Amino acid sequence: MLAWQKSHEVAKRVIAVASKLRSGDAADVLRRQIIRAATSVPANIAEGYGGASGKGYRRYLMIARGSATELDYWLLLAEEVRLGDWGLCADLRALNAEVIAMLTTAIRSIGSAEDSA
Image 1: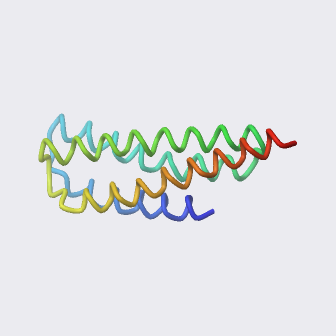
Image 2 (image 1 turned 180 degrees about the vertical axis):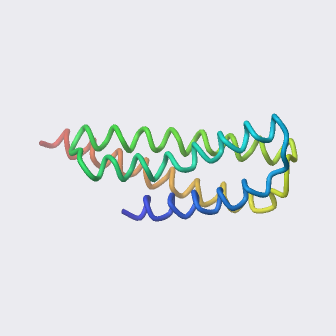
Image 3 (image 1 turned 60 degrees about the vertical axis):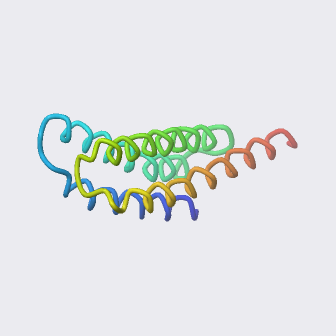
């Protein structure tokens, strides 16, 4: 699934950028939240793909989309409070927006297929 590939790429890039975030209590909390949200997206897609079908798979995709939306917020916050070199933040947010759009399409598609069955 292309959404998994893109979200996996986002997670790798986020980890690289987050590792450069300056230290301190607020930065450490923000770093953990960013990494957790970023890695949750491809993990939930993979988990759903690996064992769920229909409504179950759709639920995992919805959780992944929620994590991607949360990630967008954390990236915005990190950029606005200037906790580090987040010049790549706009690129990460743009790639993450593609993931959100793909997940939204997949969720709707599964819902439509279930409605037709």
